[in-house]
Amino acid sequence: MYLMIADEADQDGAKEFLVFAGVFFPAEQLLKISNSVAKLRRDFGFNETDVLKSAVGTKPKEVPAENHAKIKNAVLELAAETDCKICCYVVPHAIAKGQKHEDRLKFGTNTLLYKFDQFLNENGKAGGLALFDQTKDYKQSNYLREVFAEGLPFHDGKRVHLQNIVKIETTGVGHSHLNSVADIVVGSFRFVVNEPDKDKVGAVLLKLLAKIMWGQENENGRLAVRDRGLIIRPKTIRLDEYKADISALIDRLEQYSGAN
Image (cartoon, rainbow, N blue to C red; front, side):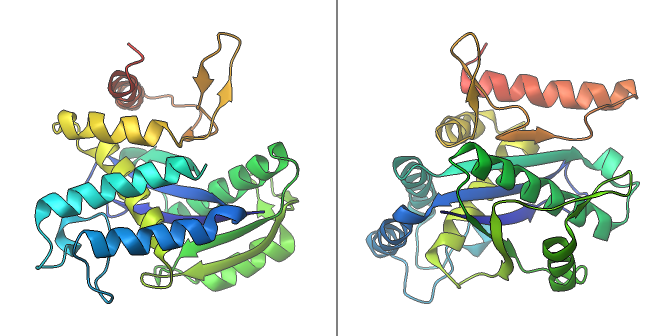
């Protein structure tokens, strides 16, 4: 059994890419992860009611900036130690802005659910629980009920039922220490994707993220993450300027991970 917690970042169009990502937690590691995050909070000076999130602006006043950076890196290391995996969906805002905001969020939701179901199928047809960060940008609960009951909608009008996901629900900040893990993962990947001028920090973060990115070993013995841990949409990009944006992103990710 696995639990997915998913969240989105930079959805307002101020940055180049919309990011939507999910963390896949093994059920047998949930208590260890929760207890470990609780200990990290105490060790780095967080009070019980303090929010632990990725954004610098959410840092409690009493917590030094150095401790905030360290606890986020420690959380990423914890995710790797406990065999968590991540799936990160990226789409250029230059393309996504042609869609309604509601549709952008639904498409990201659909993609992560489809990929989580694939991940579960590839891991012994395990069962899965899917949780999405609460949003009021559209009738989220109604949509999640629709998807669970009727299946994921495709462009041709057909629907595909999820075979391994047994529950789809919403969650929020403070509901669980696991939410902090998901927020930090999403925030870290958002930083790598949308802050290209801060390459030193991005390189450090991507090395940590690379440890938990879902992939499949290819014929060369390397971990291939495209269309598993890294989902770039749309698949077919016709305009050269958008192709250049995607190529630049992939080049930067490869550079950070030491692939070049």
